[in-house]
Length: 101
Image (cartoon, rainbow, N blue to C red; front, side, top):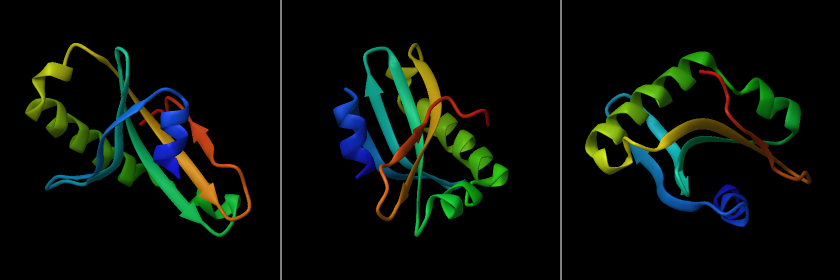
């Protein structure tokens, strides 16, 4: 569902569940000159989604993004952003853009 949301916003999904030794990135996507690293949280309700976001986890995503960029130097000149998509039952997904990590 998160990938579809991003595609509707004009993004191309580059990777799903990108794994490194220091962590996993749920989705890596690109739109024009922008690469986004997305954490997806799925819970029963939106409150639990918000509470599931942990600083330690976001720091692991940042380290994993550095590994991705190191292995894919063609993306080094692109702008990067860290986003979160919250998915809860019976609700429209919430896309939080440019999360400070």
